[in-house]
Length: 345
Image 1 (tube, helix red, strand yellow):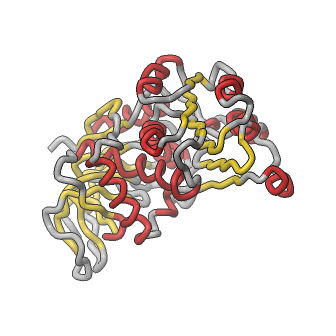
Image 2 (cartoon, one colour; image 1 turned 90 degrees about the horizontal axis):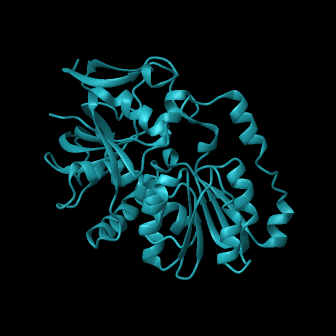
Image 3 (cartoon, helix red, strand yellow; image 1 turned 45 degrees about the vertical axis):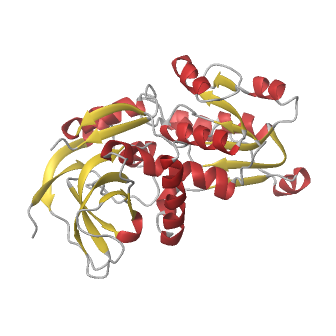
């Protein structure tokens, strides 16, 4: 049995208080795995849903959550050829990421550029890959496309905005509070609306001369989906990758979840044909298994980082022993950019 390491464990589904710091044995390293000494952890809204028990394919408690981290390779399996001990890396983990040491399949690990620090690396992988897969791979985004980004002040939203502006798309954005609007404007959005209080559809219709948008990139769902779907122009692509509308700072209430779910319109398949539009969804949790795709995508994204196109915005930083507070802050919807937890060695 390996030496004890600190982890943040979920003992039961529930509020941030269900996270507790404890010790477990160092995980074993398989032939195709690497053992990473964690330096920083990136928090994602998927972690909130995992803690609440509303994320696909999560284990039953007790378990260690976390899908993203950065650190140093301490040990590698005998079949690993493309990484070596001492490499600075980021990793995508299918849970188990909230730990001092994490064993990860080597195909889910990428060596980071020299100029990228651990804090940035922990804030880069999930946000940039989500933006790239949703907008480029699925959305086929190109110059001149009109793109509607929901929750544009979050980590994924900012990466999406940076990527869209680089391509030459016209960006219309929504945010969850007025305090986030200036940041999103400064990043190049043409219109910015508070979707929680105002009608975001009308400013977009006016800005597009009534034509609508070519891509909607939506992590909110619910009533936001209903309005966004109606804004889709012919040959438009609606990419859905989250359903944050069902959660608030208190968690996921059954009434709220039911209300938001019922507000989503039924999609009649022949209508997709007659209007010539597409509806797509994805979950990064399952995309992590596509190792060759991950390798190609991260190579492109690191190149964009080196050129200054993609730069994560870190809105808050917490020490590891305050990870429950970090969860509470992220769930409050007050955060901008990425929330990062540092191991603090």
